[in-house]
Amino acid sequence: MVGFKLFVYRARNRLFSRRAWVVLGRPTEPDTEAGVPDGIELREASSSDIEAVAGALPDELTGRLSLEQRRAMVSERFKAKIPCILAINSLSGQVVGGCWCSEVAPRNILWGLMPEWGPVFEISTLFVDPGFRGKSLGSVLVEYACSTMRDRGFNACVSLVWYTRPASVKAHLKVGFKPVGEKVTMSILGVRRSRVHSGFRKQRLPSI
Image 1 (spheres, rainbow, N blue to C red):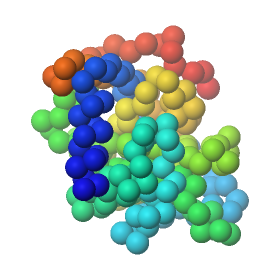
Image 2: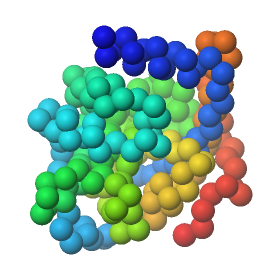
Image 3: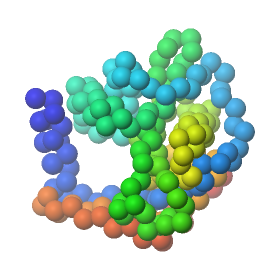
């Protein structure tokens, strides 16, 4: 039932919508020595974290999804064996940030922006708890994700970030990401079309 509700929610959002992301990329080699904030532990998630991760996802990323639907979404990603990196408050055990790391297949439309980079992974659904923002935790999560995936043979990383999330864009730029293009997705009456090109809206990017 939860899976059906999730399907209906996604279908409704695809009737009429337009979304634009800046595509950011960098090698997985370390770019900074950003320290982990005091009281924070970084680790890869396990299936026992599903409930905590679902509860920690912010509304700005999940929209109107109920907690049940968020659990279903997180469970789907674990079943697909997509690595998830978490930031944990070492005192309370609370999940205060995280992101997913998925392989970019050569047939992916993003591949045209980075044909010579070799094995590439994508960081997605990067989030930081509002109470822990402003501590460079987003940048630390990204750097940790790059280190984790580099050890698994990936040479580069790409991340799609909405222009409407300047803090997330800034977190990427701080650890060496560069704009490499833009992705635009439009949905009209359920027909969805996406395109990727090497241009991007420089005026909408935050300064660092």
